[in-house]
Image (cartoon, rainbow, N blue to C red):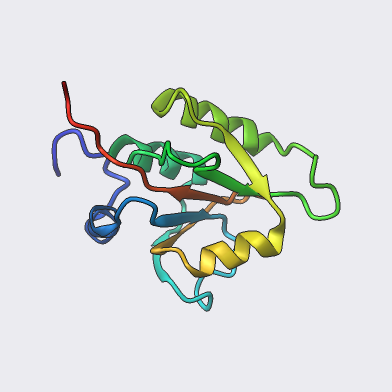
Length: 144
């Protein structure tokens, strides 16, 4: 155990988060997401919700404030303007950690294309539909 590190973040996931640089992306995927054959390294987090993982990851990783979209979900197929309940949960967690950042969505296959290029996919046990979120890593600013 380490101080101030959420216990949901195991050593392999922590190593991935630490190795990522500014602009690199990581995906938190729901239990239905096709993670294993997408390409990036997969960290299994069975039994852990996507929202719990999001909160834990944002405890240690900043979001990229140089881009318009740094926390991106998958839009509802056939109804891109629909709001799934998990989207509001994602936004609340993002706001708690990064008050100026907003959750947005992209079309399903655009999400898959970005996920293929991600540093890793964290496969959660999330059973709520559309419980997927891609995070773009930002920088740690020096304290003044």
